[in-house]
Length: 310
Image (cartoon, rainbow, N blue to C red; front, side, top):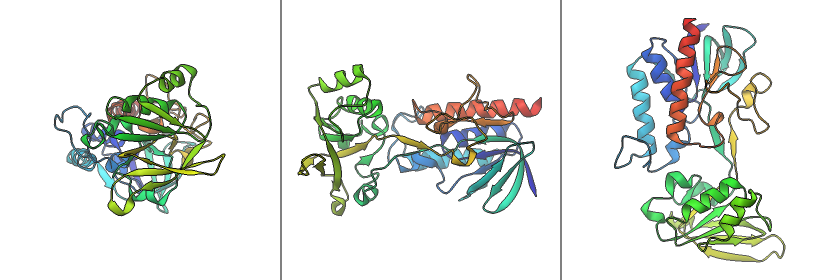
């Protein structure tokens, strides 16, 4: 059975940053990339808000650079790896990866969170081509400036996305399946009173147009009360109906909130089990930015290094 000092589960900004730091510390970490190396950022065409890239950088390139940096310092990469089970009852921890068992003295969980999707085939086809899940990441792009945009959702996240997009869009249509927002009263009031925002109540998105053209040209929405449909022209669709943290494999062992986000002992990245640390979007339900994920990955790595040294 293979044994490691540190195993890092996940290969987004948090995972690669943790790998860089633990590798530089001489711990020779193993990185389990998961089935999608690079995480959600690989689906983002241009990253303009990561410090150090004044002209921006595309998401896949940023992730590739982080991986190369980790490998330069001795990180071991296992691609397309699926963590099937984890026994955290005692150290060394035992992990089952693709049917194989391995042991580790410390574990860093950086499994991230996935966007909740509408479940439409057209959404899948236009993902990254006008369909996006992060207004802060993509809203400022030239393709969306001075164009009508659509936000789908009714909670605080959807309202924040819509408010942010008013800086760039000519108009923002907020599509919500109910006749009132689930967001906080202050946020809802601020949004509905904004001159650029037009709520579309009691409606769901039936289709995103136009996959055949490879770009978003509009949405077809259905009124859930009348059954009628209408088409709303737009240049982009921002889906904000929640996130799903990738933490199911740790359920019953690591403390997590009702939504599945792992709990850590702030300001550290320690979990309830000594030797297990968590970072990135599987912990963070608030910011969900590349730079904050990287920062928490750094913290988790330093926590793990100090734990092993003690």
